[in-house]
Length: 233
Image (cartoon, rainbow, N blue to C red; front, top):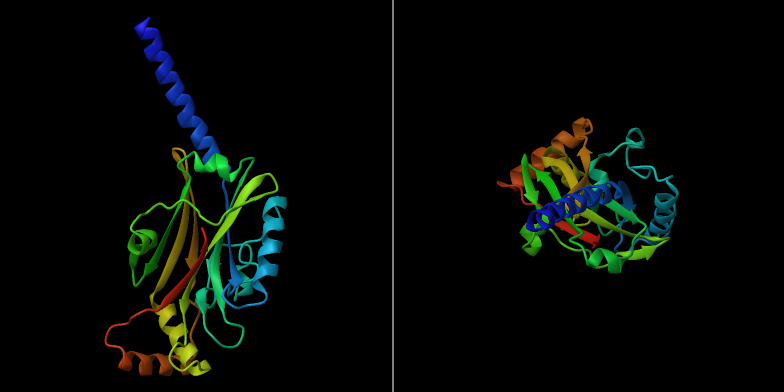
């Protein structure tokens, strides 16, 4: 009898394991360059349209990216992940996640969580661990939507903080182009993990930009980055 119970237990655990892997496959991850969530009047419209497109299966990665060549890919430019306090306020590289056929209440009973990594100067940073003390965090501002759960996470560097001029922004963008690497969002559901990586593509620089970066590097013995984040995580 004990052997039967033992094998039933093992079979149950295996079933749970494979069920959790199947659940992980249901997570839909996408990425786009969204209007700056802090101040841009275009953000709410972007997110409303994104929600509908994600659920309908018509969402196009990087449809609003700086470089038209990146539409339909997960490639991005530094302009897609830099915000500032003048002009159109810049863009945040925004990852979205959608889990169909569930509710927040159901997900809260599991170990569903997100993690985020970015590369800077050739080093991979565990952003949640460095900022919040834990690699995995359960979302706090997700919403029930069309029979599932949806949310997003946005990341951006701050540009032109000192003088808020186009010249300073151009200089900051050049430096970011040199050091920026890829960014990855991971979603954990049961025993499975789904991830999406946005790949940084460094655009060719103009001669005038080369002059700007020389000036900038003279002012910074060590490059120090300034960043801001927005997460409906």
